[in-house]
Length: 301
Image (cartoon, rainbow, N blue to C red; front, side, top):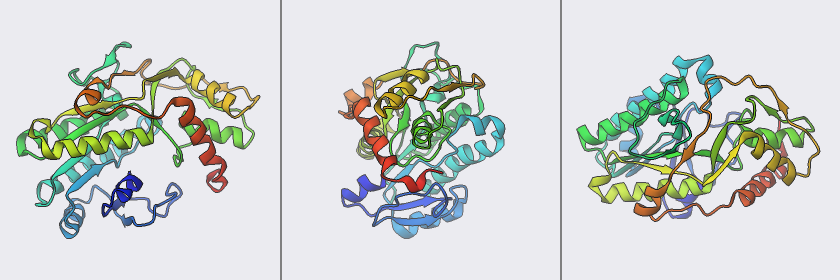
């Protein structure tokens, strides 16, 4: 996101609690890195007013299902409190013209394999899913009650170079192959997900930001973004093993809890109203992602 904005000529401030930490990799030249916590509303409000920022992309979150189950309160603090902090700060910042809050396809809960569509109710029941649904509803609240120009993105499973959450199938499988270990599947391998390359997600979110800044009718609107590549966990692991020409066999633990069995995401609205469509084919995206980790061995721990 930062690279895309900088390439477009924007002045970019990135607020993150972990700049300089183990997950901070490849900070692009030109980005003003602000080390802070989005839950510090006074600070967020001050940085918005000092910079005169007109566009806010709220991506900060605790993003993993497992840690959310283990410590739901900390996940709620980051994902829910962090969201109302950003939205309230935006409400008091005169220069703000457009805001996008990153929700998730998991906010829909279990739809029994039916494609998620934006008009469906949010029926999340597990901690991570509920935290994103709550953030989603908060964004709608600020749009409808305070007329904040905010829209919501609901993406499928993101993948791409730079992700250091090794517990995720991508990049965890890639890392396992590079260090010569069997990749681990925490579920039984049958869970179906829709995979979206981070570059396509970035383009979709930026189009949504531009649209909500000029169309009042999009305030509080949600848009699904999906790659249309639906694979089971075992299928995508085997796809990566094939691309890396690895003879390793995955280790299936079947210990995952509170996971949605099948997620299908319809991005018809984004195609229709934002003229957005995914450009990165899954095979190309996976090859590009694998290459990123091969040329950045310093991140493999």
